[in-house]
Length: 497
Image 1 (cartoon, helix red, strand yellow):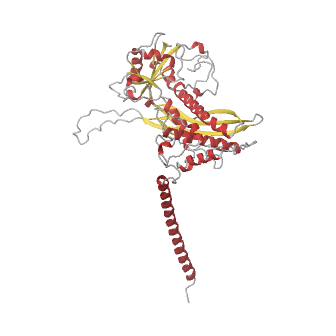
Image 2 (cartoon, rainbow, N blue to C red):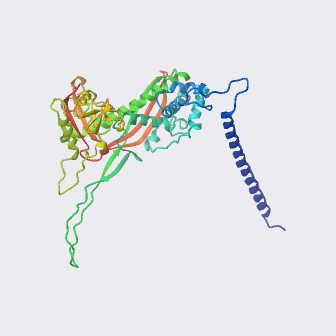
């Protein structure tokens, strides 16, 4: 008589063997499929045309990727529309993927609006292109969950498009679209591209830094058994605080969006968002001043700035040498800019001078590679007229040209961003634009500052009732601080234009 349960054991063993056999069959089948697929691909590349047709000639194929081969494919109409011949293949493919992501985001988001959704049908051609770039040609984009604290709990539960909520845009917003915004910022702004940036894990992040140096002491030999202990030295410690501030771009578009018009304006929308993201974030870093009063703000010295001005987020580079440490400013007395003035500003980056009793001061101007000279565009011709200035065309092909660089002075790259404006005699801007007639120059050590990113780029879309319009919203949370003293200096009150 068999033991109780022995039949079940035998059934289980038999089942296990059967499953193992099936698994082996599946593996074998997969291997066969791959072999067939490889053989078909090879055959397609080598096969000849029928005798009554001419043989395939690679020279007759479109130059889709810089060279022709029998396996080349013809670009879709959308690829041809977005393709830029002056850019590299890799750059074009990144741009097209970002455009496809945004286009399909708009298409899908319009159907999911809370009120009166709009059924915009993407063409089969656009859908195939999206599928190829998102899931076939490249690996599916990773959706990284961000910690947004209580704000996420207060957010509407029926958002049309949200990179966090599956089924409402998470599958459509890939890493490429967001990275393209940041890539545009890095490629066009000489400050944002070089200031160190960290990913914040909380709205307020504390970053430890070195403090004062421990003093090295001169002592004698200890020869007694009960000799007095040597005096000790302390290593100072400190920290800097990064507090995330929220920025937004709000854009309104008409709802008369056919599939073709979406494709037509996607690139424009992405370009405008990238340009705004770059200009305003760069301006906040350079022009930041948290003084929100009727007087005193370096960007609105004689009028209370609106509470939504981007430069109210934090104290930036100009604020340091105009307000925090006025001794780091060089007054040009209304005259022409000279190289001596610039050298005087650079010298201030060394601090007030080390004492031989306390070697603590950092010379932020010692490494020219980490310095940038920032000027208002009107001062460009004045600075280019200095004999010590080298224009970009004379720097040489082996030199490293930074984003937005127009030349170099004493080996320091010169940039002239649009957000570096002309000022009054005190280096601050008047609310009356005609009062701002004088030039200004900043010398900044980019390693003396730190950016933090708590939320990258989030994008939503909603419908405005009774106006038949879409509201497209972009949000980001950023932080900015400086490491210590003497990380920037400047020259002000000089003639411009």
